[in-house]
Amino acid sequence: MAGGVHMPILETKNLTYIYGQGTPFEKTAVEDVSLSIEKGEFIGVIGHTGSGKSTLIQTLNGLVRPTSGQVLLDGQDIWREPKKIRAVRFRVGMVFQYPEYQLFEETVLKDIMFGPKNQGLSDDEAQARAYEAARFTGLKEELLGKSPFELSGGEKRRAAIAGVIAMDPEVLILDEPTAGLDPRGRDVLLAQIAQYHKERGNTVLLVSHSMEDVGRVADRLLVMNAGQLLALAPTKEVFSQGEELERVGLRVPQITKIMGELQKLGLPVDPSTLTVDGALQQLIPLLKERRNPHAV
Amino acid sequence: MLSDITLGQYFPARSPVHQADPRLKICLTIFSIVLIFSAGNFFSLGLAVGYILLGMASSRTPLKLYLKSLKPVLFIIVFTGVLNIFYGTGEPLWQWGFIKITQNGLLNSLFVSIRIVALILASSVLTFTTSPTQLTDAIERLLKPLGKLGVPVHEFAMMMTIALRFVPLLLEETDKIMSAQKARGADMESGGLVQRIKALVPVLIPLFVSAFRRAFDLATAMESRCYHGGEGRTKMKQLHFGAVDWLVLLTAALALGGFVALNLAFPPSIVR
Image (cartoon, rainbow over all chains, first blue to last red; front, side, top):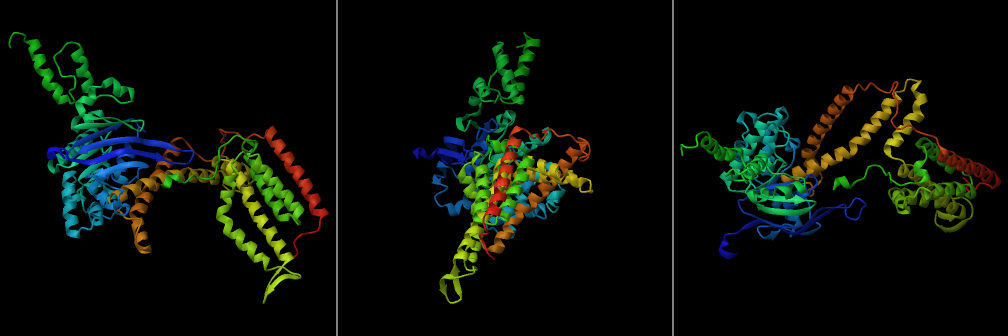
């Protein structure tokens, strides 16, 4: 590899998945998707409901076998040896939507240990992993001894996410991890995921319907539309295409839209600002300048 | 995937059989079964089978589907067929020790096999052309007289409807939970029997929890809409006994007449 700078961890080549092939209900969910994700990237996955993003991410860890095309993990086809597909699932961790519905063990700790134990780790190792994962997701230690069914909705969500993080996957895929949480819960969980990415340096794929969420944390955005890959590009670049996004049922973060309008009105602001904080940093000096035009 | 399983066997199409009143269809299915069992000779049996074939032909449902519905009972058909061959009476056509095959045995075997096939086909006509909701609706209406005896007919029908509605939901849920546990490395495809049963625990517990949650949610939703059972309840889809139904009924009457005539005119084909 040239210079060894680019090390794709996950790649897909002409990936296609057709549901119910050969029945009247046949539907192409993913069509001819080729993409490449670098090690350590934080990717936001966006797309309209039914755009194929859920199916796409499920092919990445071998839960769904593609109808045609390949998924490469570290350059190796994950379906080369179908019997070893479990090993792939440990390396590409997947947190489903509403993961709290998968909890089943007697205690939260045991539930988080389920994945590591399936990997073949000893009780001690699995327990150590569980404690660390609980820390990453902000799950209080005194909750670990409780039954998962005694926890609140938000705590259950954290416990379930910890159950996947505890397997220490090289790639972590989260499908709408903040769905159904209150605004504060969303912010905190998102910050924790960003923190996890920063500390571990792992690759993270975050599927979300919230443009604000992915705008805040993702390096690049993967945009799906009608089963096809519309774009895989730096976040700012994608959000500079507001009209194109709206055409496929998406939009840009509200603050990005406002900054775009302000620029059109002639203010010297960056139209691809992604966060409210970033906007404030530009707008406050402008306001001060306007109130006090000669002080500069 | 689990979601590939289709619930019931309803095959949507536009045909006179699909349009016919589901109550009539249930009655006629029972009628056909009665014909099959009271047929005494090949001629009347042939007429009963012909009547079912007429229903199949006018249902605009692929023949392949009907043949598929026979598959699960193929074993029973072959088993009873073969057994009947050896239980005939009269002059043996072929004998080996105590095993003997007679003409009467062969005929009996053929007769019984046709009966079972016809039975399955008759009920398939009903299930292929009637949606599960139509079926429960019709059953509720047909059983209504039992309500006078204190049988909670409406509640029974409502339970059936809800159960039917929950099957695809729970299948989808099972699929999701299985994927989630597989993503955590659960191994459901290998190992011995005990191991496989153990591997089901992480799927069954969340599934039960979710089924109860859905049941409570549904009960709350029904109560908040003041559901109080069947008393004084009107139907969104009224069942109508229309022109098609009279036509279908006419064919049934003709079939019955011909059947009785044939049954009396020819001697019984099977001798016990």
